Length: 423
Image (cartoon, rainbow, N blue to C red; front, side, top):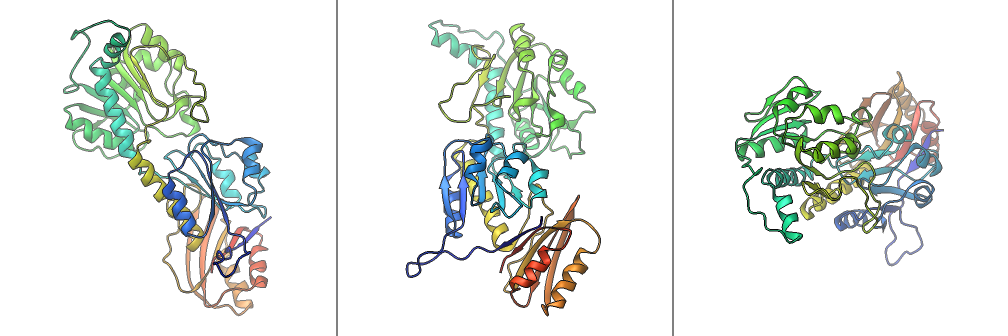
């Protein structure tokens, strides 16, 4: 059933108490700047340090308009259904305060009129710097040397240690992170090749290879920077590790489910690989202090980090501001710029009144909206329309605020997914 949402009433001032403020829920220790931005926009913000799942998450969403999560909270179709999203429920938008969005069922959210935003650029540099640090540490054999000293053994030797200058770096996935890593690695004197299924412009002296196998056979260091689509699951297993050069190094700072860790351990223990740096895992604890188990624990040539690729203070501050700003602008003016699941519309602020209409992408919707408004004597002063797959999204600016009857007529249109009266 189509959903009708009107703009929340402004928060009461000291003289006028009683009206409830709209609610936002931020999970997983999102940066405090996000809370400040949403509170300034009139939201009552609840902050929790850990992730939520299943019925617990659905219950917590009762009455919540804006949800902020990171990588551990799974927003499934079942949770959305249980929370009543899109069927008169309060939830308007979700902010993934990270790069990845595979923890959210994006089609299910879109079908219920829930916008999803992420931070595709804010922590790029942080991930790149961690990758470079691990490349240097592993190439110089710093981890086994450190482990030996911690266990009371002095091992001053150059055996197995190399400069990164002149080494070959193979990047799998040449997006925002992979391409920036490419530039900085060249500045260190590395030769760079990459493989990506999409056409990408090579930066600097990097060269594109035609297949994953070519990169594996060429590189001294292989690093994964691919997205979380389901087709990438199990991308690296025994066959891929066997195809890598003897004595090479492997990094995964992207998605835990890309890699068969048993196959990785075997390649490390056998000596085929000289080392590995792993920041993401197939199963990760939901909260700090929870137990962590991995078959890679205890190997002195493996750097294990707890999904901290983007966890610098600078990156988290930028992410907090960026995603919270996207949520604020979506609620206030209807902007879906950089939404990962709705058609992209980037409107200007307006002094007119505005309707946000999300609908199934079928012919005649604009005409039907115009007819309803004309029948009620409402003059249209501007429109912004975009489509994406099965959905269309139109912002209509009108000379006066529409009344409840007009809004009900628009919401009752058969293609309507969600209607919001913004101003």
